[in-house]
Image (spheres, rainbow, N blue to C red):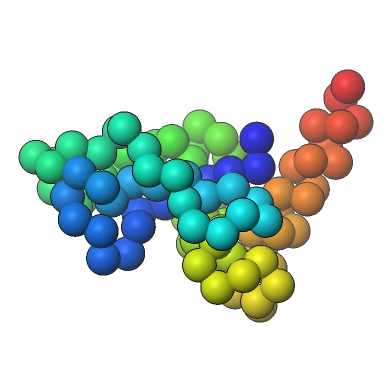
Length: 94
């Protein structure tokens, strides 16, 4: 899947954890967040989910930039490159 877990900037507790998908603007809200969780707890969840997908913090931040400002902006380049390589790798396995 060409998606990354992110902390949504400025979102209130319970709505901080989102998923962004390559070439889509905005984010999908996750059920993983809880208003009782601290910001550190939410960050740990995001990092854990991304680690399981092999996504670095830098790629996730780049994906967030792409979802917010457009996938053509330089800040999104790292995520675009990562996800394109991942798509090619997955296609080769089929």
